[in-house]
Image (cartoon, rainbow, N blue to C red; front, side, top):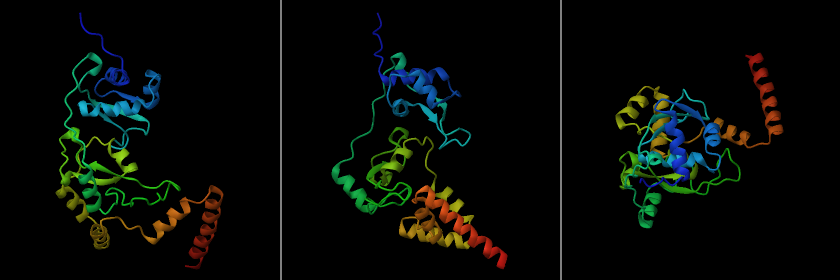
Length: 234
């Protein structure tokens, strides 16, 4: 007799995703409706990725809606009793973690925010640094220093949803070379500083976005009047 499969949350989610087949789409609501007794079913879906499952979301596939997923590859069928592959992930030691954070200046290498700094669009929420992989472990990435970087908790959460490999140096240089001389100077300055420096206009917009809705409308209306007067005087 075969051993019955333990109906864990991971197994239930795998069963649902596999039922869609490669090329099948589903929404987050459908996932929750199919597995109603599982809290945070989307997290269990992410747990399938180290086992060879590839599931796109709107962040990597612009043809998808924000709540929609696309099954690109079905990996280890844990729902059918297939043995999970042995993980190659090893814990990052404390000394290595401190070394990477110090190397990166305790600053997120994705968005540029510093540890303890408040997110411009989320007042009251401060950045906590973690260590992320440039190439994920489940895609062959290692725990070598060159593959590790400091990330804030928000960028770290988003990067775990990415299913495409990072660009090559040649690709980045090609894209950078297409810009104007002004753009290249700006980009070079950001590279030297190791972070993207917002312009005065961007900083004002960040301040405006933190105002209560009523005050945002007042400021926007007042600025619109200035713009109209400026156009009339030209």
